[in-house]
Length: 178
Image: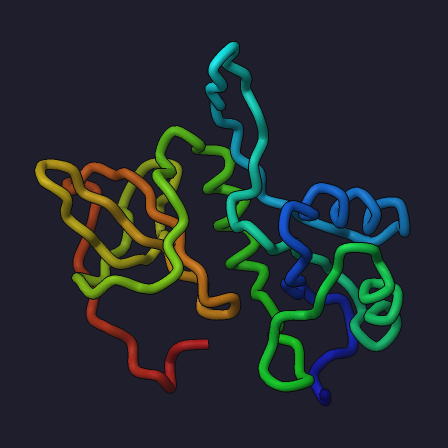
């Protein structure tokens, strides 16, 4: 755990349907927490209601000094563990957090989350709210979908986008990818 001092973003895996509770409790502890939420309409047999659901079920993000704050985070009711490899938590880049924030500001573009990265052309978005976003194109009929995949948590989000704002890019080597 050499690179875990200073403020950095980490992903937490939380108990099922405890994302909002964990987020609230972390904020009560004066910790910086981010829970990407999407407003959607839910329909029941007797009514229709607007609700906020987590973009990535089971995940809450915290910006902490790991050495100082990790015990307090783990003691928070509903937190299962830090996402990482072995006992080393994965650091989530500021860039990934900013893209998650952009995604939740454009809820009409988001279709669903996907657990694995589909094969396809890697592209960069040239214009619009997702400018400079990179992802993988998935074609479904006349509609183009872009999957934005976050390596650090092994989750993807699928968005709708016009094909004319996409530019093909060469696949990066593993040495260039962080």
